[in-house]
Length: 93
Image 1 (cartoon, rainbow, N blue to C red):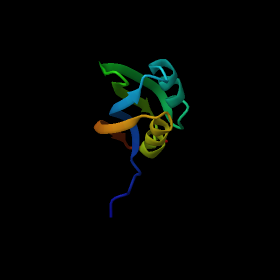
Image 2: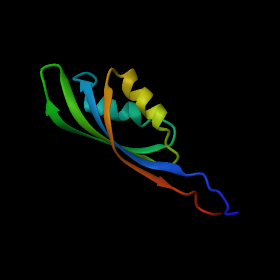
Image 3: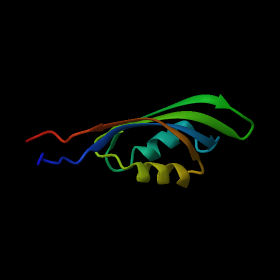
């Protein structure tokens, strides 16, 4: 029987609808506090009267999608779609 390895998430790309506040700077800083996250990239794609559509790229090792989604929702935003996910096998040590 083959040896099983747990896969870990190293990158998630999300389409997010957020209010104008918090700014994307504060939004990125808050998401960088999620366990396993080493890098956050937020780009504004569209601006409306009350909201912004942003592309959110979260990178790291062992990222929890649920914790990222919860942090996004805590700031009053909503995940519209998961556009990319990268998973890896832990390196043999």
